[in-house]
Image 1 (cartoon, rainbow, N blue to C red):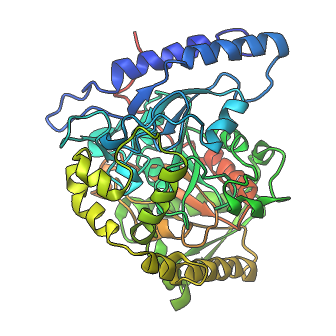
Image 2 (cartoon, rainbow, N blue to C red):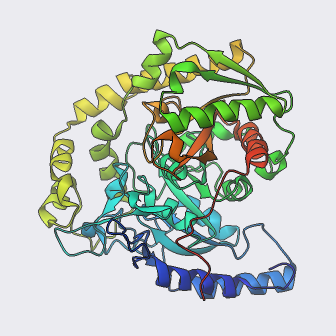
Amino acid sequence: MNAGVTTSVAITQDYLDRIAAYDRTKVDFASTGRALNSIVTTNAEALAAAKTADTERAEHGMTSMLLGVPIAVKDNYDTKDMPTTGGCGCWDDNQTDTDATMVAGLRGAGAVILAKASLDEFAYGFVSEFSSNQPAGSSLLVASPYNTAQTAGGSSGGTGAAIAANLAGIGFGTDTGGSIRIPSTYNQLVGIRPTVGLASRDGIIPLALSQDTGGPIARSVTDAAVALDAVTGVDAADPVTSAQSGKVPTSYTSSLDADSLEGARIGYVTSMVGTNASAKRLFDASVAKLEAAGATVVPITATTAFNRVLSEGSGSTNEFKHDLDEYVAKHLDPDVTARSLQGILASGEYVPSRKSTYESRDLITDAQYQAWAGPTGSHTTQLATGKQLVTQMLDDQDLDSLIYPSGTPYGTQSTNMRLSPNTGMPAITVPMGQATAADGTITGAGVNLEFLGRSFDESTLIGLGYAFEQETKARTTPALYPALG
């Protein structure tokens, strides 16, 4: 765009064409093949926004690195020009009159909000099954573009599938217990789960605010860093963001240094590696590459207290009802009739298998919520303890980061995904390779390496992740979704 070779309008149209051609079309004709189902809604205003970006570039140059870049956001981010369904048919008509704070940041940086990506209904699980815009009692599943018989992961599975299949430039998801990082590892992408408090959650349908955070899902560390720059900031509507004051750099792109591994000290807890043949082989090879690039890699034996951090559960069961009620009161379109868990159940417009989940969550009392997530609640206390313990582990061993496999071929590795949400500390996940036939797992499936660091030290993680990415160049593109025409 800067060189005048193409325009935002042309790129945006190309993405709209790819969505139309690929998203709901079965391109894998094996009996197990499925459509991607990664997009809920495309933005009728996208081309107009792209034209505005082109005019801005023509008159003032590249005023932002995101100027004119088409972005897909998970359909739990409020957007004033598209409904926000949360993946639920019961909220198909939830047209908010404001953007989520993070979406406003993206628009302020000149990005084109292209589409809303599908998700596991209300961001609950890892299979990305949704009922948005479907007949009552029916649902769709999101597929991985590398193997459409497999799930794209979740809950941000639509974002993961769309970005891997190149249906948008950059994506955004949310992560409570793995929901950015799991779609990233399943789909050979870079995902950043920021420190809780780096990006405002206001205007995002919550799952559990003790652990919720939004962040980018991209095809490169560079793209993820550029995207993260646009969504940071203190927001009075989300008080936890006040903790970031004075801790955010001018730009995370300043950390994109291919020599970042030189002299770095990186630890790994041996029990987090697991025994999966693909994940272990790729992890061992990654350790060798980190060391060859100048890092010192330190094995660590888990303690009982560390294992307690990993075993703490997600807040979604005890917090969802309380936090959803707050979103409904503040953001939900007044014309939407399903305004509570009971209302959702009464509508009949939800993923059928979720009925018992919604019923059990509706039984949570305010006393149970307070005992769990209140100021002195057991979960609140454990999260603070976890952050202190893991930070002390990094300090005691003079470590820049901890690493571990983000998953296995289309699966999770024990409780690895809980380390970041159970401490509030940031993590970046980067492709480290694919499963081979000799592994005896799922040939071709991607597995990522995750870097976890100190709160508000995303810069260090981005630097390490970028250097690792440059050493490995591990990402491949899905052959099922080539260029059109």
